[in-house]
Image 1 (cartoon, protein in one colour):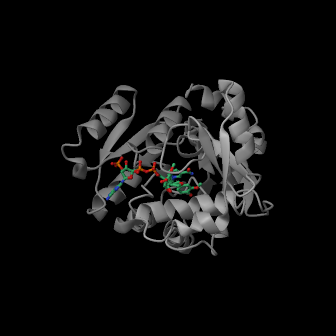
Image 2 (image 1 turned 90 degrees about the vertical axis):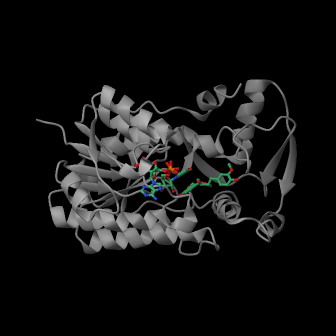
Amino acid sequence: MTKNRVLVVGGTGYIGKRLVKASLAEGHPTYVLQRPEIGLDIDKFQILLEFKRRGARLIEGSFSDHRSLVEAVKQVDVVISAMSGVHFRSHNLLLQLKLVDAIKEAGTVKRFLPSEFGTDPARMGHAIEPGRVSFDEKMIVRKAIQEAKIPYTYVSGNCFGGYFIGNLSQMGTLLPPKHSVQIYGDGNFKAIFLDEDDVATYSIKSIDDPRTLNKTLYLQPPENILSQRELVEIWEKLTGRTLEKITISPEEFLSQLKGAEFAKQVGLGHFYHIFYEGCLTNFEIGEEGEKASKLYPEVKYTRVHDYLKRYL
Ligand code: NDP
Ligand code: GFR
């Protein structure tokens, strides 16, 4: 049986490039959208050339050219969007509505994975401003998908290691602290940490799976469901050094919103809901969802301990 053809949109991005690699590794005929707008962004262009070398096919297309998007999606069975979620002011996530229109017109796509890969936006109706913008935009895209009756899978990828493991979930840095670590409240709310390559692998596993059709796939690898204190302890054992723990109350944490620049405010919102509310683990998965580690037990996901070794 021939493998589903996969198109990755946003394929030179942080999670996008990992999705392309995972699709190729799984043996799917893999296509990557090549946008003319990348212009002289030589890094992006080199990434595209490297994908081509590894057997991916580049399809030219632009979000400013509806026809090009329709022609692109007509060439594949599955579309995965890894559209940026951080450039909030330009509302990139809403650009995906153009992709939804193209998929609807083509009428041939068997599965569409919109750009999510984080906190389940359906559970974030209460999210604080302004960080709620990314959840609200993801829900607008979901509404359009479901109104167009496009078959979908939503991937809740929880906390990417690069933003939450390596820095021991400290804001404003990607490196582990050397002397002291900020502990959010009592530091005991459980979060869920993922190696980004595992997010991509689980996502690709789901695209052919009838069990994930029109469902949310929750990435909850059991050994990576940890509190911030447990995360810090793993690092202290690895380094043999103890960090001074500085507790920050929710009131103190949220007071940083005042006067902070927009992106920082958004980050504060994400961190608040994760570490002061436990939003990633304070619910049971119902009919709407599936647990990836149950569906795909064969995936040898990277444990937090091994992810942290990279930072020694
Ligand atoms: P990036 O910032 O790496 O951007 C991804 C791609 O978006 C780019 O490579 C580009 O595609 C495309 N893009 C950006 N601007 C435009 C534009 N104006 N027009 C068309 N395409 C554009 O994204 P991330 O990988 O950081 O984020 C992807 C998803 O993952 C988001 O939904 C985000 O919320 C989520 N996320 C989750 C995290 C977590 O911890 N759970 C952490 C980080 C992100 P091209 O390759 O074609 O140039
Ligand atoms: C956990 O779910 C998500 C996480 C999500 O659904 C969408 C985005 C995120 C990331 C963001 C990626 O851009 O969490 C916060 C934010 C990254 C960020 C990290 C923002 C501000 C910071 O100071 C920061 O420090 C590591």
